[in-house]
Image (cartoon, rainbow, N blue to C red; front, side):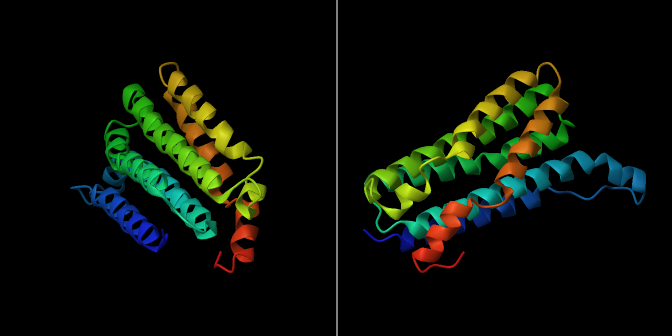
Length: 196
């Protein structure tokens, strides 16, 4: 089964997710810098979430660009990833509107943890489909970022009830680690004749 429709559908859903998040940004009602400061938490939560969704889009693009085929299990795993990504706008809005309170910060962490697990499942199914001797298998052999990120999210969720700012720092740290796409996958995409 070809992967083109899967990529096109995923791109469309991710674009809608970003659109929904930006629509949650509301300008202040007063024309003062103080009023602008009141919406700063909403803006910062949007920036972090935009970065996360962009990271997923980038890594999803590279991963699927390197795949030679998809099957039904991969389609469902991809839908699960998109479903969990679609929950990020809700968690983002709640996080910003409550000025990073403990419960919304924990829910935000769960909204980051779920797509991380879904991406790992998708990647595992793609690796199984491609086979152990494939270029993809060689490129993704030691995926330390993919294995450590969920552990950081779990720790951050637990920390929210001690100090939400520590949790936010962990969310930012994980985003920064993922900001640069995995060079192994970039090289694989280049070898597969694709754009990086």
